[in-house]
Amino acid sequence: MIYDVVYVIDIASTTSGGNKFFVELAAEATKTYKVALIAGKTTPEARRLLAGVDLYDGGIYGDCELPHTCPLKAAKFLIYATKVLTSIKFRLLHTNAHLPNLLAYLHPRRTIATIHHLEPASLHPLARLIQILELKAPKLALHAPHKIAPNAVVIPPILRHTPPQIQHTPRQRGLVVMIGRLEPRKNYHLALVAFKIAKTLRPDLKLVIIGDGPLRRDLHRTIKRLGLQDVEIKPHATEEEKYQLLTQAETYLHLGHPEGFSLALFEAATLGAPVITHPQVPAATLLKTPNILTVELHPTSIAKALLRPPPPAKPLNKPAEFAHIYLALYHKLSEKLKKG
Image (cartoon, rainbow, N blue to C red; front, side):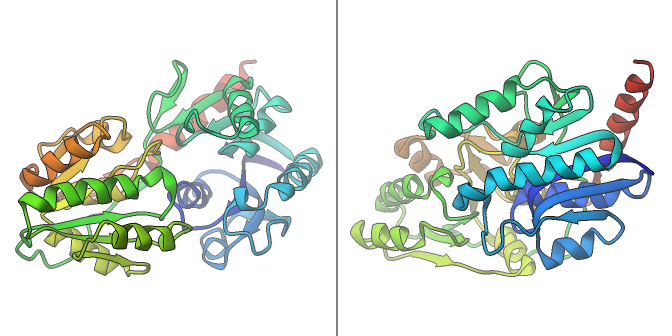
């Protein structure tokens, strides 16, 4: 048997945007192609979505939530993935992020590498070297949500978006919402400083942050140090609760950098919420709607935007489809390989 597409991902899960996209893409591809997926760990929810995929799970990452929290297991995973790839036959290899993308050096004429975003210059030297190798690796195609390199194939890392069926209520004056994992690149500390500045002129402002992560305790300390009263961190919320907050928010604030596509921003904007973000977010570039305001990542610029956010927009009421673009890419590259 020959697989049409083999996917490689370190942790197959649905808890982060990039990994969820990749799992859903593998599941979608089974409608047209014979598909396998190689992972170092597969969560129960991802396993359910991958029911039609031949799954090779090395069980390497165990209790690790994210690959970078268990760096010593990375080499073990790459060895496992290499062994599986040498034991099966396949036409296309699609890898997802950082270390798995290095497999392009072993299969340069078959690999499609997905890079969701470039890391900051302050990255650890070893991680920075991996990113350079990842970009320089010979490959069949480089996929990204924005033009990170001249040869990048730009496709949003989502398959489809169906507008949620929710009750739209009047927007709450002063309600600012942020959604995302509590980690440094999301710039929550910057948001808190900007919020404090804006609140001196608009006492009615209230900030609700939905998310959990390694910065939670530090953010609580910063909130206390800045003397902020109207800031709430909700570690968990259902999808329905998130959507309801987005329909009520006067502003959705998104400051993640470096950032991938940002599905959260995409959902907020398509629900009609006024969005404040920065110019480098791919979703903001794709949508280009009047309810999105881009500002520089500086507390004063963000505070000014919070004082006068953009107007809300009419919610998107039609589904957006992107899955067929990926299937067309696979077909095009397969035909290219056949022609030699």
